[in-house]
Image 1 (cartoon, rainbow, N blue to C red):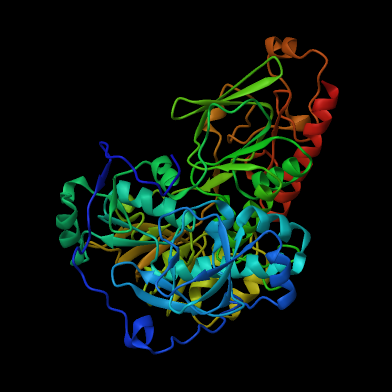
Image 2: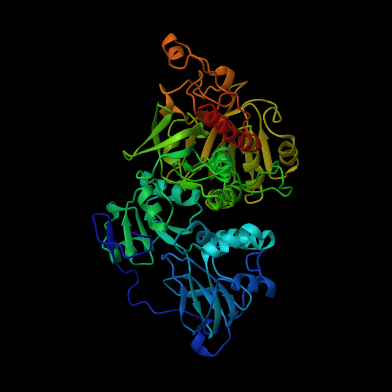
Length: 586
């Protein structure tokens, strides 16, 4: 069943109407029948460019011109769309809220519709309807993808617009709704999935939003049955798994019926996405498996300023989105909600077991599962995780902080990037480091920015010993690790970036890990037992190959790797080269 089609009722899906009978609240200037011409949206950071006559003519080859009437819907929220619309005459309104039917943008001739989801095969997160009679050019999305591959100017124009539009939709709270308690682990799981995948949505907190219970009553849902996900005010998904939500919005999930792949990549961080781009562009049948969302640890960075080719910096989320589009352009499949629980290798094939009981088989595997930030060992801290305690610093987390102040724990680049980002949004940032030298593990450019910033206070030789608050985090207890002296800091949020633990527990027993759980490769991938040596008597691993022939590791999960985005990307590309060499050896 395609996402967006009518979904039959089941133990999870139900249908209900939110605000049934509510009247439209269009303003006079937005109402096509009022006789008042809507004001056309001005461009915002490249979000709404106009196509040149030459670009329209290029798109017209393979497209269809179509007369349209005021009130006609071109794109409907929650439904799949495979058409790229160019406005030739008339005006199109973008509906930002399905309940009030409020038009938030108006596009005129030369503009085009769509946002990131159109290129990624997702359902629409907005509704577009004609507010004046006119004419549009309808171009199949596949045709547009083929065109932008060979037209760098058109490609950059469309991609930039779509990336910015996705951010605008997220800011508007368009898309689906999540209703659930801020204290519910299941609500936090759904919110993390939506945020990490940059899916436009709105969270309605059952504890603090007076509308929540009224909405639940209209849906026939009891508070104890939350969280729920609502589409278009009609479809209700009760406490869905990540895979169920992914399918509903058009994200690709594992298809265990697929034939053996040439290359399976586990993890969609910088290393995994680089492997996907180079593997697929080299003609390998490539699939990438990711538990939550593409981007990995780097995807939670607000701005990466030392990555080659982006002198003004780039957010981790945008870097990941661009990489996903690039990988998919070459034919790689990016599969989310794909948790790998085991690896078995036999006869030149490698079988990855999935948490849902399925499995995928590949001729070669690249492990790029990365690492995750360690949690603070502080009593009671788990009560505030997801509300006051965060392990990422993106716009979503920053929005919950108000004016602060906030505290950040960590001395690496991620902590530094979070400090600079949050200092522009809150009144005070306390940066807590265990040692005395901020530059020991942080890049100099970040140290300089932090030391110059008037809103940042760096507390050296300082560790967190306690967290306190009623419903929200209100203060933390810190201690000078030289003197034992304690103090209390009033903060609205605590951000934790204290080193990484490799995501490799599922590999124990399948291949060689070092004492800290990182994957051994190359010269370090030596066998420790005579039985293992007997399995591959004439084989010695190449630099990124593990203790199992045909299984490679790249990025932060690899023992001895440099924990930088550029290094991870380089290793992902190099691993593909070594995969080709492995195939040649066989």
